[in-house]
Image (cartoon, rainbow over all chains, first blue to last red; front, side, top):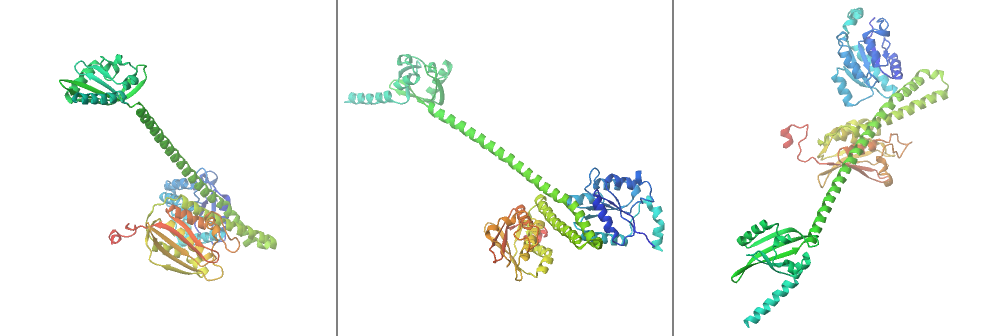
Amino acid sequence: MTTDPIVLLVDDSANDALLMATVFQRTDFDQPLRFVTSGEDAIAYLQGVGRFCNRAEFPLPAIVLLDLNMPRKNGLEVLAWIRQQPSLGRICVYVLSASSRREDTEKAFALGANAYLVKPGNLDELSHLARTLVAWIKLGHFAVAPEARHEMEPALADRSA
Amino acid sequence: MMTEAIAQSELRYRRLFEAAHDGILIVDPDRRAIVDVNPFMVNFLGYSRDEFIGKELFEFGLLKDEAASQAAFLELRKNGFIRYDDLPLRTKTGSHVDVEFVSNLYDEGDHQIIQCNIRDITARKKIEHELRIARAKLSLHAAELERVVRLRTAELRLTNTQLETFVYSIAHDLRAPLRTMQGFAQILVEEHAVNLPPQGRDYAKFIDAAAQQMDHQLTDLLAFSQISLQKIDLAPVALEDVVQSALAGSAEEIRESRARVECLPPWPTVLAHAATLRQVLVNLIGNAVKFVGTGTPHVVLRAEERSGGIVRLWIEDNGIGIAAEFHERIFQVFQRLHTTEYSGTGIGLAIVQKGVERLGGRVGLVSAPGAGCKFWIELSQARGLALKSQPKGEAHS
């Protein structure tokens, strides 16, 4: 039995996050979508500090879905921070923003985003995005942060068996 | 006889001297003293004849001082004349006058005399002065006007940009709560319908449909503001490529409407921005295959070269047409002529107009109810300019 990688969604709109979690639930993804609703919480989660100190409850993700437009610490700042953390290795960051402005996509890629997804406007398109994303995640091998490698090893061993 | 003739001539010139409207002074070059003065000069400067006689020119300001006077007389002997175009003088009562001063040295038998002509140019100078002031004021006003226009234009441009940015952020921000409304309304329909009475199910569907319609409007509004805000550099664009790309982008709508689309070459090269022009064409093609009435839609695309280096691109359909009274209104944001028979957001043609405006062109239409629509857009022809995408060698051939 393999386990899908952990996905952390960062979105300041709790409604959007809840909707995305619901949509993820309707796919065959076997992990619940983890989400936090601010850039500060995203960083705390990834550091495993404060209320996120229990890694059993808040496992380190292999993929971060990152909203850009957030108050105080925006997505680009979180992305820049992530890429400065050797302990997070090549953790995958997919930007998930309502903005399709070229300057936003260019900045995100310049800061090391792995992909840029534009938030769709309705549920059908959002479901389609979630299904495609899940299929993609299930197809791939994702680089795991050095810190998390130890926990993930049994799962990887399973996969190769 | 001879003496009589001389006397007559003497009389003739004496009259001229007495009646002249210029001041005349006769000066003895040896003594530099005035020996005769005409009545005009007496009136002009207000000194009596006796006050003039025997005096030197500088005493009336006609030369600066004694030293200047000596120098002037030397010059006069050397050149035969002195001329000052513009000499300020004071009359006896102290008022200021301007004169043009010419003096000539003449031989008169065994001796020489100097004749000075003094022309009053005070009035002319005054007019010239006023003219200069008027000109200076005029150019000052013109400069001020230009400054104000520049300022206002800059202000307007700023306000316009702020408005467009405002539209963008409004449209952008409104989509987020809308996504929630639509998403959960649909989940309600899809997953909880069993728990709802039929009316409740309908209500949830209404919310879902209205939210989706609003989302389309916001998406179009975003496209509209993006076309207003994006940086556009005009370059030569092969019309054929853009037309083909726009048709590919409209393939689904063309297929659904079963429209027959005809492209009639030749396609010149125009000065445009490919992505913006493509968007404009997609909207016009979408329009052409949408308002079709009962028949099969037939759309014709062709380009026409007009005088003055203008290319007019026609998008013609055989649809329901538009009455002349609406020809201006259809280009405004959220203006729709049909709300039930045809779906739409009312922004498509506003995007067309804004896009064409950004390309430095014009848009218009020829149409009447029942007679189809012929939309045209005019762009500058890019004759003799190399296409960006082509290698240099080919572009010149």
